[in-house]
Length: 250
Image (cartoon, helix red, strand yellow):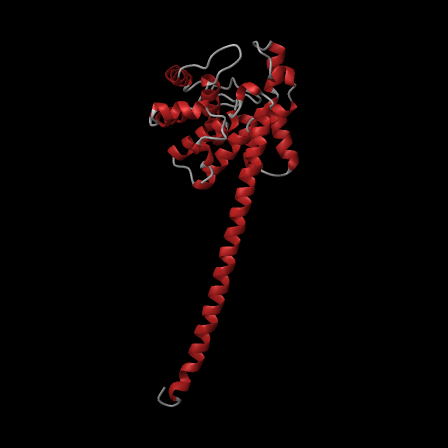
């Protein structure tokens, strides 16, 4: 400064302006990338939701089932403190968990009476059928455990692989609870849905044998934290009109 005066500041100003330009350019690119990521997320959400509605539409007695299972699974995932990324995976896994029913005959899906043992064996194949569909599609691989293993039991008596305890992926153990609860409280052509308290009692009874004991406990907390009127609305909705489903991805 003593020798060159103000001219000595010129390189510093040029460096500052260059750094500022590079930073703002980088920041703009980051914002654009985030916008693209959000667009992909929204597309995936809309695509999977539409697919779930198509799956459920094949079984007129379980309309909205996949979205309700996804919703309950998401609430369990949040309750146990999973990251937002993992919470989304549980939600999407719930949406797709029954995709294998695409390969099950309508006569079995819409049968008004109880299934025969042979028909039940065919229904059980939906876990493997769905797994193969998504695996061969080459996308959503992180959801494969949810699709294949949501009917496994911690005592090893589930299907299709007879996994035991923590051999069952966490996402599948979460959805096993939410899937069972929705199946119990939903109406069927051969029976009315169970009262909520009775369904929760069944969850308690199955904790440690059918269900992961800790996850079953967390699920009961989730259910009991909701006002009964709100809970009844969620159970009776078809997944397209009620606010919790509209906001599930956000």
